[in-house]
Image (cartoon, rainbow, N blue to C red):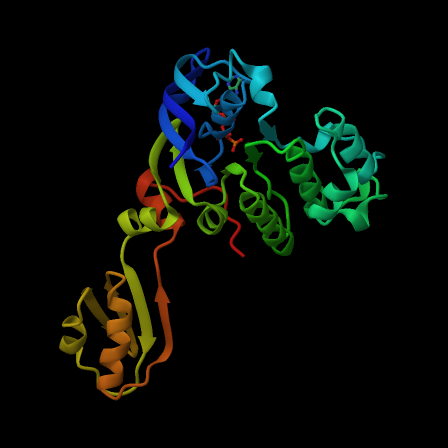
Length: 307
Ligand SMILES: Nc1ncnc2c1ncn2[C@@H]1O[C@H](COP(=O)(O)OP(=O)(O)OP(=O)(O)O)[C@@H](O)[C@H]1O
């Protein structure tokens, strides 16, 4: 597995504020690597250092074998970053934006092919100022990908988008990965990290408190699977307790709650069927990244945007 970014004991202070505190991680070629955390966790500072926009106070880092602080110009050709909304004038048309930013790259950018690749051709004559939030983000991703960089950094790409536009933007990010570009995705949305990222670094108070695949994080830290259902007839509690992976069975009037490891989910359904019980409102709740965040930081995430 090729490492394209390596960060080792990175530290960044602003006067008495420790924004990034002894952070280490690697990003592999071709993955979507998420940096997840609440406001002020140190995410943006970390990715700004990766792009050479800020100097680290301490630690070592390499991006595509380059030192971002000392070899910024060489890195800029290989690392794309998303613009802020304020970077484009409202009257600039979509095709003009692609043409304008395309001039910064060699070889020349094929404007028509770029518009088509990102589903922007029907918007080509529309001024930036009238684009919807999702259309703007699609344009920003297209601009960040001009020049075919090896890595792209996307920071809070879906903030303020409605559920449909968010999902469409996720598809655009998957399209970026499918094209072979490594994505570093900064987000404070748990569901975004969970469904989009191959691996996630959870940041809190300037530190990385966990780094793994979303599934690895939830399996390790997310707590038990919970199965709830309603029954009207008699239920043999001991049979359910004997199901492999079941830790507890609680019966409260007609509602039954079973907690256990993920392996228990199928076993409980089978045990009920064997008892001839047809439960109502049968629900299985698997741990989510939100549970992981809670267990790591002791508080719920600030970025709630479940869809
Ligand atoms: N230029 C600066 N001067 C002083 N403190 C700063 C500066 N930039 C960031 N900070 C502080 O560093 C900490 C980390 O900020 P950072 O922007 O990296 O967090 P973040 O995780 O990206 O947050 P958000 O999701 O709100 O953007 C915060 O406490 C912030 O106030």
